[in-house]
Length: 475
Ligand code: SF4
Ligand code: SF4
Image 1 (cartoon, helix red, strand yellow):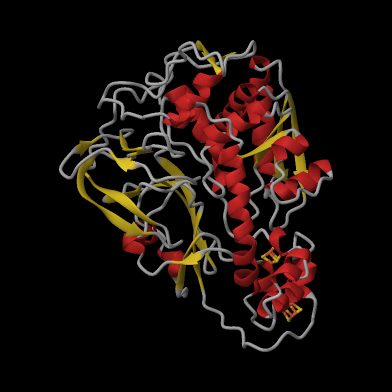
Image 2: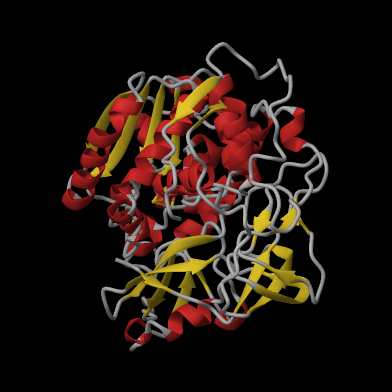
């Protein structure tokens, strides 16, 4: 279950994804409808468009600073509460579609990974297709403390998650669709299994599997998945696609893909967990750009006794200083309200807890000491660049040492290279990087400005895929 939030305004940052910020495609005073593109990718750049999840007037376009330090232009839209939608936001009827059109729709819908760094989904699909992956993995693990938004997405829209995964699996040419889920999530397992049973007749070329994982944090990071499923320890720069012939997507991203493919809905809203120490919390379906303060108004029980509001989970999130001007972005899965617990700071007592909990089998205390002494090369040899910034070592340390910040920032230099290598190898064809024009108001669908044309580079024998769109379905 989730609550729907209709905010008084939204603040839409032009950069909520990995890549270059979009450019505002509206001006102050313009009237905007639900589903309208308000930010377009600059020509020839790696970027995604931005869409409005409310109708109303643009009141401001200015730079904002997000809690993660990103400074980006943002479009503020005041809600007229009329919920006027673009005519093009409506279900498609049954038709054949090519793999490159599928990628185009997903790209034009502004979809990026909803569970991590916000890598544009079209680019990731393109790379998986170029790498000829065999297995399409769907991360339904949601192991972050308190966060349950992905689980709610599965419970409420299991068919959309499964259909999105099937469509994307066909797009990349995979032969198997595998859902990864915690063994404790019985309700979601059942929902997925029922949907697979219902849908598999339309996807006879795909094999299905549900893989059960132990409940622990962290679980869904691709390098942990590579180790758990394929027994591979991926080194920096190695990809799941190339080394394991598999690709991993978050389940909420799959839901967004099916909304775009079947209902022509761009990425303009998401489910967010609002939770904390004081209560079990809420899940809210909100337009992207909703100020955090408007979520908190509806979650007073969560705030009781808490003195920190965190953008993200309580282990790795960033404290929010100004909830009124901090928006929910495409990658915000949880807002946590937590109590400030000050652990008395002491030198390391060599208890070994940090090593015990590290999912990458590192010795955080040893690496921390090396970095403190400026021994960067040694820290690297000790595996520091393998750190996935999960926050566990700092959380368990009884000496109150902030191991994560030191190790993760050192590893982060490597991670930038790692993500860049994804972009270099993404095989993005020119059209995906080409000039993007905002669809005319009320006019074109997400497909229409992405005609398949006669692009032989991406056209293959397996290119045409049939998706089971339902006729006359209500959005
Ligand atoms: S933050 Fe890094 S070093 Fe610390 S436990 Fe997680 S992976 Fe290991
Ligand atoms: S958990 Fe803290 S005190 Fe214990 S070994 Fe690690 S750094 Fe030292």
